[in-house]
Image (cartoon, rainbow, N blue to C red; front, side, top):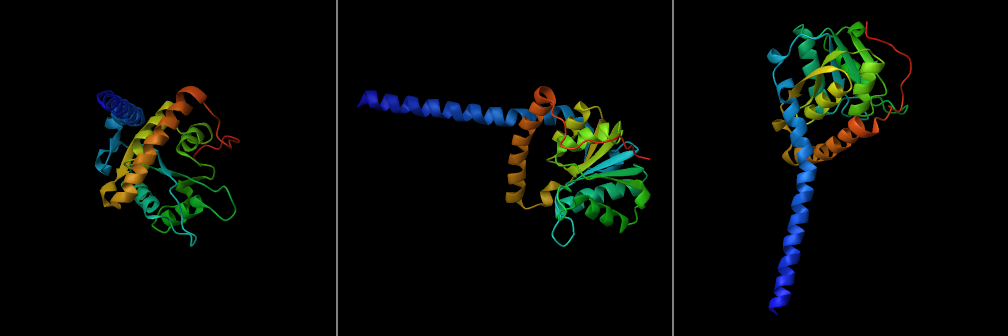
Length: 219
């Protein structure tokens, strides 16, 4: 009986050890990325240094052609910086992978309806991921420095990725506390997994985006 109890206790300790290791391996990269980008991420426009380009990452649009609340928040941040003169151009990057789904046209319409001139907006129709957006911003659009507009939970990965790909990036994050708590928990957990993938792409695999193309630049 004592031997069985010791075996059960051993299995429990072993299981807890494996679980603890898995949790550490999952969240340690997220902690590292957050730490090294901490001074480059801001929550108010006043702290943003004047930069020519702001990059807005796509975050979903509805069937009626309106942005999701998270995408609208990103766009509002970019529009605010543009109005304050902190940025001169907006690069809007999102998913237009099919004829019936077009994030970037929705993004442009949202901004022009709020006073941003069309000539100050550049669209990247093949920004299917954070990695591809940053890669294409540097290679296709010639971006060397930028303000990244996104949710605060996404900014560490976005800033780190852009900087590793040659863009001197800073970030302006939204107030994530206003989102539904369960929804936010889901996105934060998913972000922890996405960070592991980003580290693999940036430091080991170095994949090319699905689409590249000719250099376009931002006028």
